[in-house]
Image (cartoon, rainbow, N blue to C red; front, side):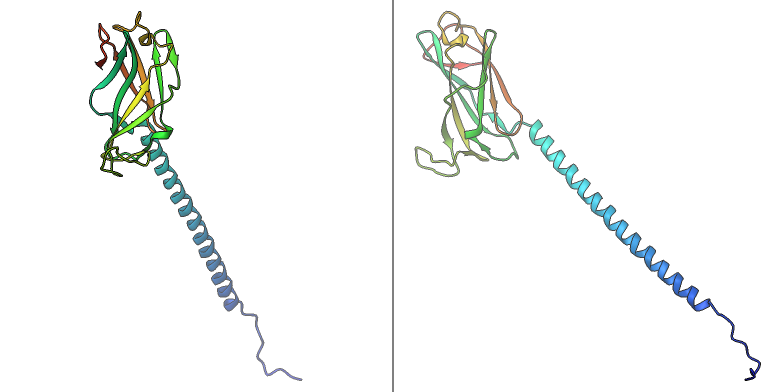
Length: 196
């Protein structure tokens, strides 16, 4: 059979356009996935940075502070108990009093954990009738008096070395900075004294 004179020629124009569209879509999808991964990593990093900053601030700042005079009880020329009134510093989280530890040190003695500690609530959000009820958490606007018994080996625990003795107690909450308090006993040891 004779051809009518027309020849069929190969035309790749449409196929090239389709290939270009597929490649473009692939690039867009890859770019979208990459940007999603990068944004996710950025959000994760900024969240971790925020947590690190908050943890650093919590650990670096003291969550408790003294509130008023620090007093002591004397008996037979020696100090038997130290009373410290505590409250929260502004803007800090509640402190669990059951997790607070106290250490005592003087030039010749160190006790890393003085026990037993006892707590007396002076101002409480949980109860208003004496004795004040509380949940064991030192909350904002609450005051608690901490009774610290003087360890038997301490310089201030014996009459011979109790006068004009300098010593340090450290109050350590579960989180937050340690509250160090350096005190000096008076020249004579009365039954009740203000330590300074």
